[in-house]
Figure 1 (cartoon, rainbow, N blue to C red):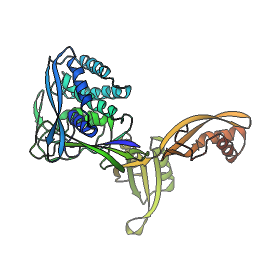
Figure 2 (tube, rainbow, N blue to C red):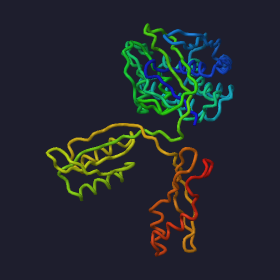
Figure 3 (tube, rainbow, N blue to C red):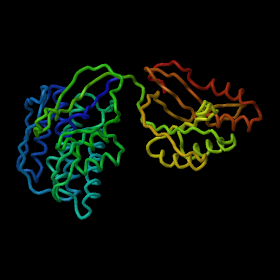
Length: 406
């Protein structure tokens, strides 16, 4: 399936860099010119034009050059209304409008947290912000990539001194770091003393891509390179994008908790597993092993997500008394899974049964009814679980069908 890779781990990312890279990828600047004309038509904008030009930063890339004259930015509502007006004017789809609103929401939330008495115009200025948000989304749509999987590597944030509306602070840019923290985006180190990832760039990544520390398994189709507008003397202020073909497996980020136990009863382990599942663990399992001094140990492994891992770590330590837990985050590829409720007839009565359908490689690979629902039917009808399972399977599509099955 088609996908897009965004690679900001060396040069960082901003809205204009991503737009330049996508324009280089597609070979078309027309959407940018159309967007610039729509922004120039705003009542508060006296002039807005954009030009795509060549940039030499160690590799051939494209850079955007702007001419902007506007009145001072208004309220948050004015900015949101102008964003919506321009998005409608250029024909951005519901997919693009929804993401544009979320990106702007992240920018404003970060600024309000960092500047409680009023947001900083340095970070949120109307015409620039509208262009930086909408241009990448418009180009993604024009390339036919809207709705496709978007992968990204961890962005390099940069360092040095960063000017803000309240003065100069040490890098990385506080609002960019705030957005990465809010979305738990992993970041990359950089020795460059300059801002590499802007708040808008961080917000675009947060609302478009799954960020992982490696490239997905892919077949590259075409590439694009976008340069930042400020030279850094190192030629590294370059953002790379890749249109590619990937598997239709879904990439997720999981957190794995593990601990070794050598002095605990089976009853305590069983209770701990139950508590972990009750608290929302995706899966919990126990592996027998041999530990130090050749003693038998039990390794408890807990699969969870970023939101729940801190709570589950506490439960694991409280219930087992372990002195340490290994924590690591890693990606996993899973089949696309859909859950629905179907009506099945067992013994002349109709029952609702939840069913999970899994798809991969363009076809259905598994159709699994919910065990608890079948067990309840077996109890109510006074028959065996195997009999219920046979009746339920007759009502379900067989695995191996085409990808358009529902």
